[in-house]
Image (cartoon, rainbow, N blue to C red; front, side, top):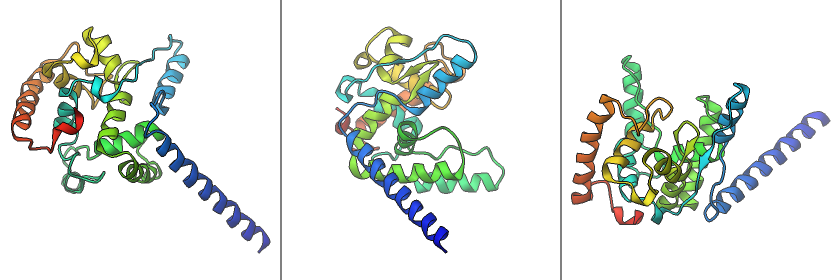
Length: 236
């Protein structure tokens, strides 16, 4: 009985410690730039194990120093309801579930908020445990950060190529410009590459990427005129 009580007390303190440190980290990152993420460290470790030179390009910039075309493009390709949902797109989750039941190729249902929570606080993977932590951190960042900050962190931390992370490093490495100078066409290519940036090179787009670029650019022009995805001035 004593051992059970001791174990429960230890678990209680572990939970309290996790909750307090996670909340403090989220509050801190509301203002502080995210300099490194677990995925960056993992990729560097993989490079070392393969005997390769470590490749890590990452330059944090404020959202106002990123072309407004890039938030538009990633919403078109990754999360069309980003400005409407509270962290989870239950319509997309439902569609993905139904398609999975029918044996179709399952679409990704993770929102930009979920991807940001995973990129900043968690490790890659598909286990239910990691998904549970992802949901927890998604709720926290939605409550504490808000949409503008989530988009800022997302565009600064997401993997955009081999050893390339964030909009500024991507703009410099792939297009020889600054993130603020990215054109609508370049932003569309970056967004199209994000599902698999190690195989899709936005600087050397495949025929498929070029076809998708035409469609995404058309969608971007339409949402700029109609504000169909929400008030885009939040990103300017």
